[in-house]
Length: 281
Length: 327
Image (cartoon, rainbow over all chains, first blue to last red; front, side):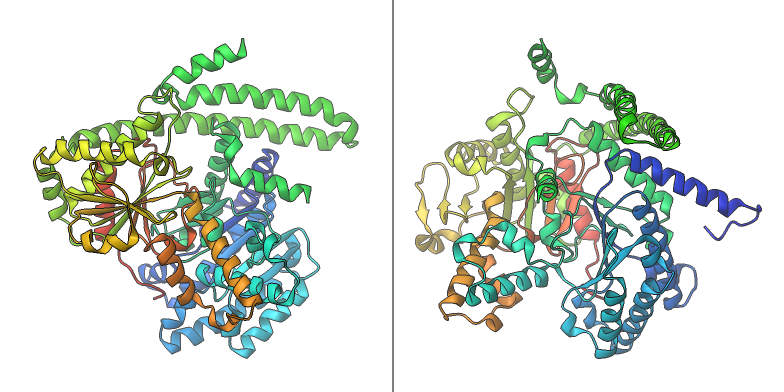
């Protein structure tokens, strides 16, 4: 939205509209509590606009911040973003190193004093197979989590480096360890146990996935969480840096409208049950 | 009184239920909510201004909903007309040759496809078990005509698994319509959960041991899946592994993605290359999560019928998609 600053006060006006609309959506009481994002298309965006690749990633990061701000303002509790897949290690060493540097930078930026995490009370969590991270990046990640650990209003999960299958295997391994140690009794293992050992444990179930740039695959992202009945999947046909808060607003309105008025079979909506259960616990 | 209204409503086919009528009734609901919440909130909300602000937001919300409902109504009608036209354009009219022609234009076809089918309530047109079996046999015929060897049919409650007899008869009947009564292609129906394999109508069930000798002859292998093959199967695997681990027969380090994949492939089957959904907005409905890692997903917005154009357009999308895992 920085592009059209020709009228004085235009940006402030847009900002005002944005916050008002966020509050309007919030009043509907039908805001998805956990939204997942696959932010696809940063490199293509850079190519399209004759930019350097890192400028594309920067634009993507800014776009993410704007969208997340809107989400948190409208009352969302959890967001999960796919930053780096375990498969991405297949890229050239140069690019991997460079992406690591970038991520390190951005994680630092989010959790810094006065930035987004503090402003909205967001707890930053980096999920995935962290043993694959280089030590200096890991240090930065731990620092960011330490700084934001007392924030309670919302959670931002950064998947870095992550795959959905690895998450399921990780959960199985944890359960095995605990069964062997005797902290879990074999008979008591149920779906909830598996869920409690996923990286997203303790957070509301994922209700909405947004993937940009028109790819129609999950690409190994949150497989367990997204296969829930009643989870909405929105595939948007624009590149991630072009995805504005207003595109997000449209999706939120669509979501709220559907939840309010659709004559769907509510009794077997798995997500609703899970949300209700969580409220009781 | 209310049950009577409900009864009348249920008999109206879903196509005539427009978004607008639903939204109008919904809007009155919201307006009522606003009024009620205002009255109820007087005690709770001490701050008068806060209440006013809330009412303004609610009012704005209603305006947005009205605008959205109107635009959605036109969008939906537009989509429906487009769907009807597409349906006419792509009508296969029970002919495998036409489907072959469509498929031959494509650069690549998937090895395995999956379809999520829905059990519609019995009052609806094409609802109930006969409707479901009709849908399933249509998909089977298109798959055979396209030359795809593996098909997964997913239905949330496993209704098809419980009535394999009817399903076999239904598929046989449809195939006879497509290919002629003399040369009905042979098919096998697999139920991975109970480890059963059924062949064409006249033959009895077989266990997996005898399966291999006959397998090469079938034109299509159909797997029936339901929600028990999804998370519940992963749960069972977890329990078994935890048990083995507690007994010291399996080490935690030995469990990796490869092993779990191997086990789940054996229990449920391979990952499909393309997943078709015949509903208006994609809902995976508990489809086995392990098996949708890189699957192409295809559905048509606002469509609610199992129609051939969704099938062929899904195949087209698959042919055009570029796969670059991680890169």
